[in-house]
Image (cartoon, rainbow, N blue to C red):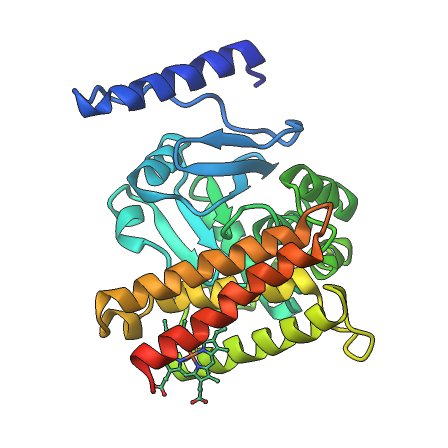
Length: 318
Ligand code: HEC
């Protein structure tokens, strides 16, 4: 179904107006504008979720749901299963409270292997039989779109080319060639191949311990130092490094730590520190995927991140 733009805009304005009025009394939220279809050429925004793009009927990619608003929007869109490919810990209680199941299958910014592609495809196939599925990363632009394209191709819903087209609608940056390669090389999967996998997926993926994550953070930081030296491009002696992917990985590692068990056992400012660092790394990632990359701005942003390592180590480690 196609909703005229004017009706959509009116509905959006009504939604916003209702939200502003929430402090006085809380009427039930109005129905959301019609969800995306695979012919919609611009991402949709709903309260608490952004960049929503359909890769098949009842299969939407977008950003991490923010708070009650985000989960309410997903419930209103009829979502029955959320699949997260982000590193952060899924808010399982918020989903469960709305009768929505969570599946957590994180992927990186440089692409993912055929095993993870199989798992994502199997998980989506089984979940989709129960109702609409929402797949998200953090921004809902890069990783979730690539995963959705691979799954849609795997299930024969889209050709690889059409999957890549939908990634472009999501705004997947060309600065992530590994994600595009996954979608371009995706192939349909047979029911036999999918059925051969165990079909029980975790709602929260097991994470590596705190110290191991610090080692990965250290590694991503070293890579970014080499990238900075090469004028914020891929260093000649390290051709495998993708600048934006390293910053995205850093943001992902910090986010997972901020929400993890170790942070819960520490004073509250510890998690806040990690969360702030995740935002700093995310801004670096955004600057690295911008059309005009300003080396001075990038270096200034990176300096904030490295200064923050020392600050936390002095307070909480040394
Ligand atoms: C919010 C606090 C915090 C921030 C921010 C932080 N660290 Fe750490 N880091 C720690 C703590 C705590 C440990 C000690 C962990 C332990 O040994 O239990 C640690 C340990 C380490 C280790 C030693 C790991 C090992 O093998 O024992 C390295 C390397 C490291 N951090 C690098 C970094 C770098 C690089 C950054 C910044 C890009 C950073 N850290 C940011 C808290 C932090």
